[in-house]
Length: 224
Image (cartoon, rainbow, N blue to C red; front, side, top):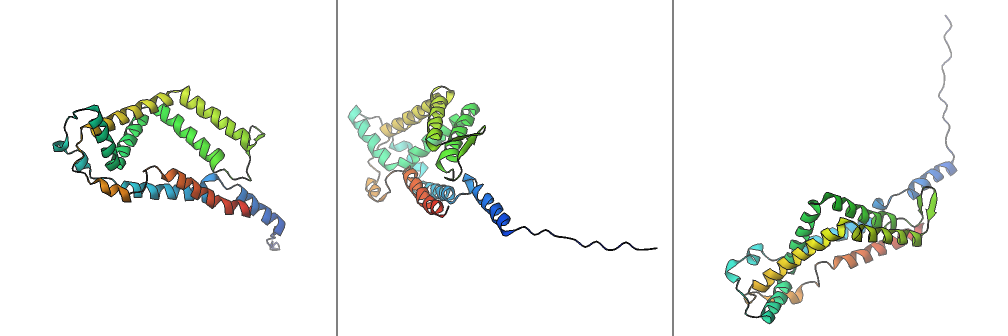
């Protein structure tokens, strides 16, 4: 019996040009989630949230029933609200955030619309790589056109759906609860001088996070 000759494997090495084109295409297809600017933004928000929550006052002090009394006048109630807000700022904002979250969870349709709107702003405009134009149904949109579309979408979602009413009602309930607590909580036993060393505002991380993300995006854009 004659044995058939062995078949040697033949490899077709790709040229360096093809390899570089493939690697360049994979780099250009990098999504907004994997960009350094987006990672810096998320890390800065998480760090700012942890730092802000670490400055909250004890909840037992917030709910101390022995420190409540009826204000004698409207001016006294306003002064109490100002002092209590200066001292319990982080606690008050946490309460309002919890009310907002509960309101959105109890309205799933509004929650889905709001998450979709925020995702559209993040992935289609704020953190979309500059070398990747927005293409929808074969049509390429400029940055200005994308911005106009997102603004129109925001107006539609907030004012023409249930999202706006859910957010406004939740904020009104939260503000009313904060004002009621601040008006009836006697602030004489609070050490308000501590606020001189506290960072200005619990939600100030948005501006600093956005600036950090922009600073991180500059070298990335320079390399492309």
